[in-house]
Image (cartoon, rainbow, N blue to C red):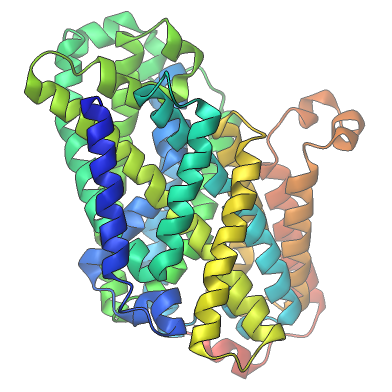
Length: 481
C-alpha cells in the first residue's frame, strides 16, 4: 500500500476511535443533538472551521481558483462578510439555546414556518453532503486508481460518513473536528511555500498565468462575483449547522469568543486554498487535472510534493487532511438534517413522549436514510461548484432572511415568514427546470437562481409582514439582545 493509502487509513481509524470515545457520554437527546451544551470556545472554533471549509472550498473553490485565479475569493469573501455579522448573532443564538433552526422558526413565527424550514434544510444539506461524497470519492480514486473508481469511492465515503455520524452525534462530530481542523491548517500552511518554490517562485507562478488570475474581478463580471458572494454570505448567516454549534456552547461568552477564532481561521485557510490552486494551475496547466480541476489540491499534494521522504510525507498528510476535512463536512451536514427529522418531526408530531433511548435509535436511523439519499444525489452530478451554489442558494433564499429577521426585525410576522420560505425554496428548485428555461428570456434563464430567489423571498417577507398584524411581545422576548 502507498504512503498516501497508509495515511488515509490511519486517519479513518483515528476518526473512528474519536467517535467511539464519545459513545459512552451520549446518553440523552441533548447529548446527541447538542453535545450536552458543554463545548468550550476552543472546540467550537475548530468544529465551526471544519464544518465550513469542506468540499465547497477544497474542491469547488479550488476549481474556481484554478480556472479564474484569486477572483474565486469572491465566494470565500461572502463567508467572511457573513462571519463579521455573526459575531453579533452568536450570543443571542446561545441565549435562545434550542436544538434546531425550525425550533427557532416555530418560537418566532408558527408551526408552518417550522415544517417549511425542515423541508428547506433537507434539500440544502443533503445536497451539500452529496458533493462531499463526490470529493471523497475523487481522493480515493487518486490514491487507488486501479482498484477504486470515482463512483466506487463515493459508496465507500458514504459508508464512512454514515457510521461516524451515527455513533455519537454532535459530541463525536465536534471533537473529530478538532483533530481534522488542526491537521488541515498546519499541512496547507506548510505546503504552500514549498509548492511555490517547486514552481520556481511567486514571480514564475505570476508569469505562467494570465494577468487576470491576480486581479480583483479577473475574467468574471460583477454579476458573476455577486452570484458567488451572496449565496455564501447568506448561507453563513443562516447556517443551521453553525447555530447548532452555538446551541452546544458552554455559554454566550464561549459562543462569541469562538466566532473571533473562526473569522481568523477561515480567512487564512480559504486564502491559502486559493493560493494553492493558483500555484497548482501554474505547475499543472495540462493533463488529467486540467480535465478535473476540482482535484487540484489533492493532485498537487501527490505530484507536486515529491523528492525527499519528508516532502512525500507532507504530501500524504496534506492529502489525508483534505480527505478528513471532506468527511468532517459531510458529518456536519448529514447530522444537521437528521436532527431536524428527529426533533422537528418525530418528537414534535409523532412521538412527543418518546424517551431518550428511542430518540437516539431514531436519530441514528435518520442518519442512515439521509446518508443514502445524499449518496443517490452524488451519483447524478459531477460539478461540485454548481452543486454547492445550488445548495447555498436554497438556504440563502429560503431561510436566511427569516432567521435574521427573527433576531433583528421585530415587525416580521408568521405569514411573511411562511411566504418567504416557500417562495425562496420553490424559485431556487424550479429555476433550472425546463419550463423556466423556455419561458424566460435567455439572458435571465442563464443566470444563477440566487438573485431572483433572494429578491422574491425578501419582498414576500417584507410586504406580507407589513400587511399583517405584528407579532406578540411573548414571541419577541426570546430573541431580544
